[in-house]
Amino acid sequence: MPAPRKYPDELRERAIREVRTTGRPIAHVAKDLGIHKEAPRGWVRQTEADHGERDDRLTSAERDELKQLRKENAELKRANEILKAASVFFAQEIDRPRTRPSR
Image (tube, rainbow, N blue to C red; front, side, top):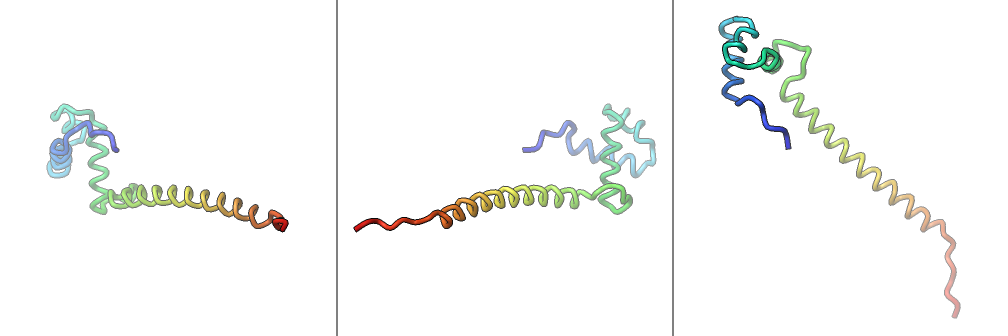
C-alpha cells in the first residue's frame, strides 16, 4: 500500500496550474502556497512529461506500466524457481533404482 501523500491533490493541482498559467517561478508559487519549492517542481515536471513536453522523464502511464511489469517479472521468477525445484525433485525420483517387491 503506498504511503499517504503529504500534500492534498487540490494543492498539487493549484500549484501546477499557477506555475503553468502565470509563468511565475516555481519557488515563488511554492512560497505563496506555503510548501517546499522542490515539491511543485517535481509535480510540474511530471505534468510536462505526461503532456509530452519533456522526454527526460517517464509519463505517469509509463511509470505505472513499468511498476506492473516489474511486479509481474518478480512473480514469474518465483514461479520459475518453484518449477526448477519441482523438476529436480521429479528427476531424482525417476533416476532412483526401483526394487521389485518379493513374492
